[in-house]
Length: 353
Image 1 (cartoon, helix red, strand yellow):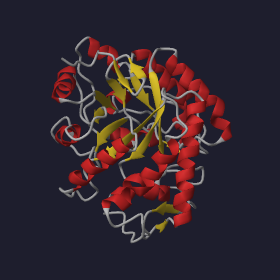
Image 2 (cartoon, rainbow, N blue to C red):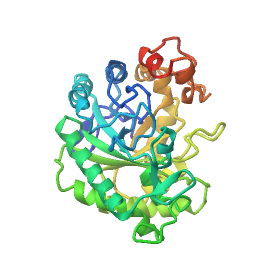
Image 3 (cartoon, rainbow, N blue to C red):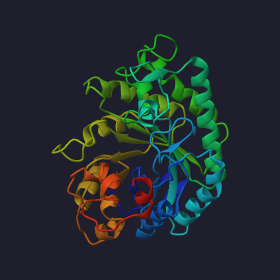
Image 4 (cartoon, rainbow, N blue to C red):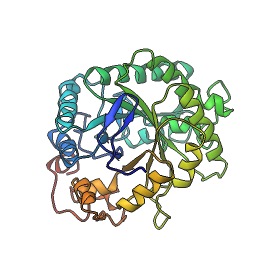
């Protein structure tokens, strides 16, 4: 019988419980993409509270393609020592840390003067050329190798929420007619190339996991069937775990956990650990999902509201998060991460004066 306090493994990485902090953009990098002390503090507090696996906010693989002005870039040499400090800080408390890495796709249009690159051209983006796709693959592999060297336990490919790899998979975004468009297999090709190259240089104690959408941009009901096939291909390409999400995670008043039905469809077709994010607020929800076949429980907003949420769970307390979604904007105006919190974060005051 599964419960959230059991130890488990992803690849050869032993986790002290089944609780995962899902990647969350704290907006605590500097405006030119460097790690700050306030950023490190978030991870210190999460690890100290007892989170088994912490997935970082998404980090850019290319300093010339970032999703917003505070988007931290892994390959910026100024971040090398801070990345080592980040991993050491988390490991000091017995937690593990995986870096989520991304290429922004259409999100790159949010930065003034930056030309966003996407699978297909739109009104405010340009389509990637074949050579640019090859360079993107090389950047992913280079980033994965660097993160292994500085002490991370793994990386997560961000293949959800409208970032580049999810755009390649989603026919809503991908209108290409070459080898990277058309069929589902072609739309998956860039991911296959990244994994093929990256798995040649990683160690047994370093995991590569993926985060995927199970609901498309236009909520196409057939999209889940494609994503089941994608998960099979991921398994064949050596992926070590898959986190299940969807484009509509901010939608109010939806049944919780948000993506459980789709996650179980995938669970029945692959033999890699399944991490489920979306709507978890108490122990009963979590253990029920585990009993149905999910392997790890992933959360974001409960940890924004309270980094000590793991300790509250041990006392069978429910998250104070009320799903108001103010955390998606409040950092810009009130310089805090949650409407229920009083603490002001200095780096947010600097970034959003």
